[in-house]
Structure formats: C-alpha cells, structure tokens
Image (cartoon, rainbow, N blue to C red; front, side, top):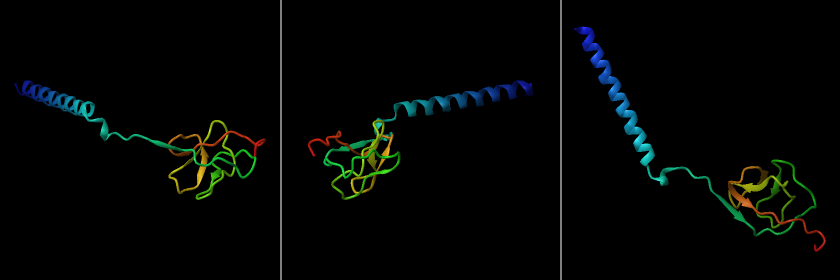
Length: 110
C-alpha cells in the first residue's frame, strides 16, 4: 500500500511539473513583441568623399569622428559602421549600429 501511495505522489509531482512547463511555455509564446531585443541600424549618407584612393583592411578605421571624408573604402562585403554618429567607424561585416554608406569610386570627376 505504501508503494502505491508513493507512485501516486510521483505521478502528481510529474503532472505538476508538466503543468508548470505548459504555463511557462504559454507565457513565453503570448508575451508581446515589445519585450524582445531587436538589433537596429541607421544608415547615414552625409559623407560623400574619400581622403585617399585606398581599400581598408578589415576592422580598420574607415571614418574618424567629426571628419567629413572617409579615410578609405571598405571591401565589398563589409560595412563602415560605428556605435553612434560621434564615434570612429570601422570596417565590419556586421550591418547593425550606425552604418556610414560609402559612395562608389568616382575618381574621374574628382
């Protein structure tokens, strides 16, 4: 008789655990989207020229803070990005943060 009681108690505990999982699962599914972390980026097209006709290395400074010209051009697969408008920007493959849109090479008209 004691073994049947312990088995019944175990079943009740297991059922409580499953109910807790179901409740937490429903809460996480029904939680509003505003609570989620969303990576955002901002694209700035205000800088339109280059100091030198050179391609940057990966993780090299492509634009210094408060400067009106890019130091170099990031490779095709990279972005000139910074954590904000008033920070140095580096060539990175990550497209989040403050993205400085680099114009195409146009040395003939310069």
